[in-house]
Length: 134
Image 1: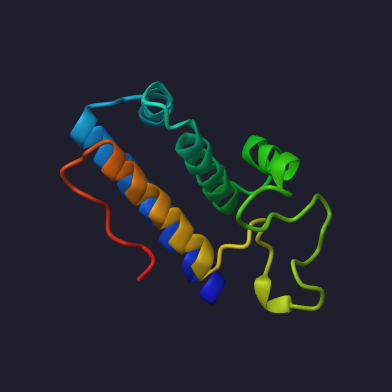
Image 2: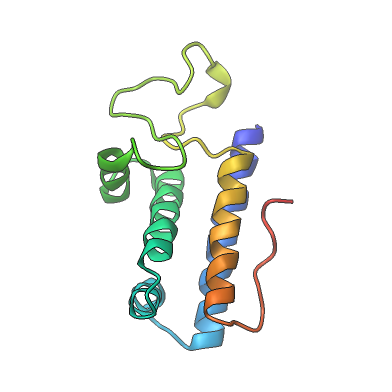
C-alpha cells in the first residue's frame, strides 16, 4: 500500500508541476518547451534527470510502452530501480511490491520532488509545487 501511495504522490507532483509551467510560462507543449529551455540554458543534465522521472511516472501510470523501453535501456545508470523485461520482483519473494515496473518508494518520491524544485528555481518560477516528499 505504501508503494501505491508513493506512486500517487509522484504522479500528482508531476501533474501539478505541468500545470504550474502552463500557468507561469503559457506553454502548450509543456515538456517539449521545458526540455528546450533547460538545454538552452546549459542544464542538459537537469533535463535528462527530469525526463527520466517523467518516463518513470508514465510507466507507473500506463505500464509497458515507449517510456518503459527507454528506462530499461538505461536501467543500470538510473537513480531508481526498473524491472527488466519479464523480471517478477525487485526483491525475490517480496509479494508486497505488486506489479509495478518502477520502484516508487519514498526515496523515488523525494528525488523526483527535488528535481522538480531544482527546475522551479532554475526557471525562477514564482510559485512552487507542493513538496511530495513530506
